[in-house]
Length: 432
Image (cartoon, rainbow, N blue to C red):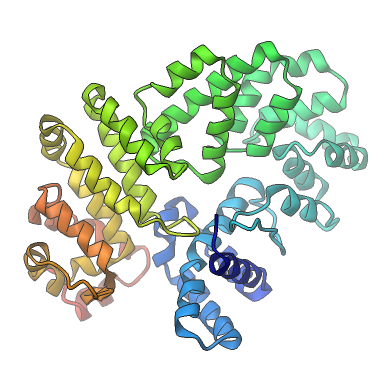
């Protein structure tokens, strides 16, 4: 249950992000969104932060309240950029509808866009299909020319083609043909995290197909979680929905499956105590690869900063889990050249000051010292929890000075594309 303060802050930031000037800057920051975890540090997002700070200053003078609002600027902006990348890459929405918990209301936002006749009929049809808005799809279909309809039937390069074909055949009344596409349709909806589409298909699907389709979707989520170690919010909800549609016998198999995605669903439910209890039972039987995926999952859950209310318990969870992992598995992971370096790469790209000479020279000091209890901000603009985490990585041997040194090239490559590498090399004296 969110507090009144949290609900107020969420309402203010989501309303503010519908300001056309601010929203335009957020959408402009969408460029290069594949590096979504690092977009926050980009030059374009700096413009978003500056304007947001200006707008907030006009509303209130309370420093702490302004800080609370600005803390949500990135996760709310991220949701806007992510929504556009999935649902409307060729449309520039002017208004987003939000839930009380700071998530975009997919259906309400899409319906608002669909009422805009300035958006081409083809783009409106694609958007409606992604959310399986049957009433709107029929209305748009009636507006389409034969050329438009043929385009969707034979256009093979459309990313969401299985979903589009489903609705084309539905509009034509070809129920038998559309059923043949069901596995492809369901896989497509799961792959792109189309929660509303998954809900729709379960509502019309024969009972005898639900278990098989749920198992197909779960398999995809298992693979994604084990590969990327990160699930978007709608994908987590899809995971819960898929689990609910499995036969009871398969629920047991899925629940006890040695996979990061299963543990991810427990973790995202915020049942951290239950998560640790389950983990304690599974760890003796988990492979090194699954343990590694789980640690990455915990790391991303904290460092992505995509939660509307950042949960710092993830930092402690990472430490607790690491200490619970059998020593033999910990040693195997530490021995992997890129394991500790991977964590440093993400932290470097978020805050490149780790690579400055003064930070490098004093890193042993930071690792050996305990921060004062009342210190909220430490040198080089890192908060206490970030330094605590880095200190932990070094103490446990996960991150070493050599791995930090080898990671310098990552910083230079990252900054090179931003056109400021030479300036930094000259003015900040990056370590040789």
